[in-house]
Amino acid sequence: MARFLVVYGTTYGHTAKVAEAVAHTLRTGAHHVVTVAAPDGLEPRPEAFDVVIVAASVVGGRFQKHVDRWVHAHADALNARPCAFLQICLGVLQRDAAVQAELQAIRTRFLEAARWRPVETRVIAGALPYTRYNWITRWMMRRIVAKAGGDTDTSRDYEYTDWAELRAFALMFAARAVPQPAPIAASA
Image (cartoon, rainbow, N blue to C red):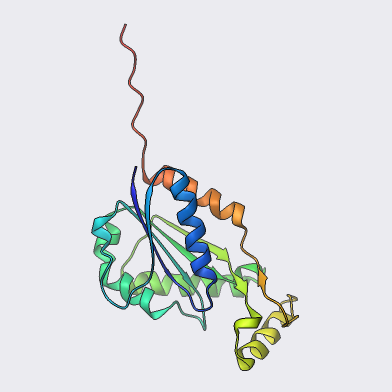
């Protein structure tokens, strides 16, 4: 049984839901999992865990400042253990090469600035919580989504996360990050 830390940053709550889904999946594999919103301080320390997964959403071309600070503060410890980074955003739904390049550039700037080298990075489709936005954000997001041909009914929220794919990722990453002992060969 490995000790996993899942740290997340969320603005409208969807990344917390993603982090909890990952944690639940890991727990079904009999792992000990601590899930925490990225703190303003240094705790929890990655050194207390075998594996770390960080999830953050893209808002305005950046990740949440608490995630950024925590990863910067713990980059050396993170680089010393298996880690994954989950980038949560809506841009992944667009097939425009320029949008995909920008998503990669946002992730690359973040990882390089922090000097963090996770063994796995994934882009996960997020949500469009129109009912949680203030009127300016709702208006702006509706315009952006309309240009991309997306859902524009602002009276409801939309989730685009492929939950089965997310669970499969969590299981695959856990299997790679926590090698199982080789079976003992029977002696003759």
